[in-house]
Image 1 (tube, rainbow, N blue to C red):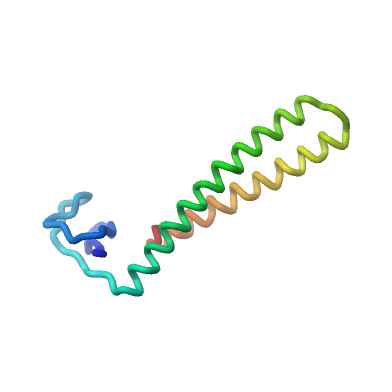
Image 2: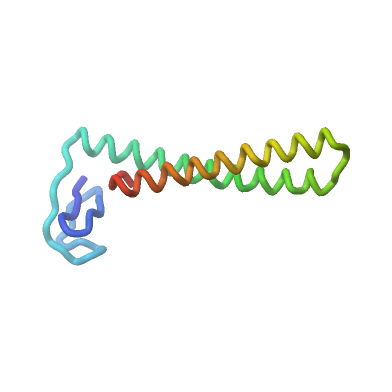
Length: 104
């Protein structure tokens, strides 16, 4: 893997010029750094999937709340929705953290 010295994009193969910024300067990543980058990318994909699942769960809970079967059901759906929202926000925060560290 190679990282552009100007914009920081990481590519599997060294191109003649950076497809993002046009620079011609790249640094080869060590085996350890490439492995960490790959794990980070896989983790980010999992967070994205968690965000989508949490959003879907919140929508399902809204439907359950709207049905208003009884107070216990509404309470359960409300708590589940809050937990799903927290999951979504924590996942987003981790993605932002990864981006700030250049781990994406």
